[in-house]
Length: 106
Image (cartoon, rainbow, N blue to C red; front, side, top):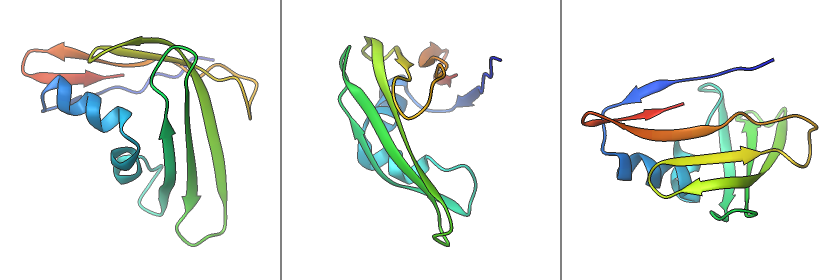
């Protein structure tokens, strides 16, 4: 099964890239819904490096860890991540692209 989530963000690509690859920023926006939050994130942004995060229900009832290994990194353009631990499935590629004056995230 393949799932793609896409949104258009009215911001420069560099700003979106920073928000998507900086741990402090990731914890500010990465949530499944208003009653969830990301309590920590780490980013080792290089091929073979790892992204990891911890998402928890705000009421403390449930939480999970998520980690992937970067297989391709193109500064201010794309990040491809392959999940290699905690689950046995492929994490779909995510990237930003210039779309006029906006950043496109998929």
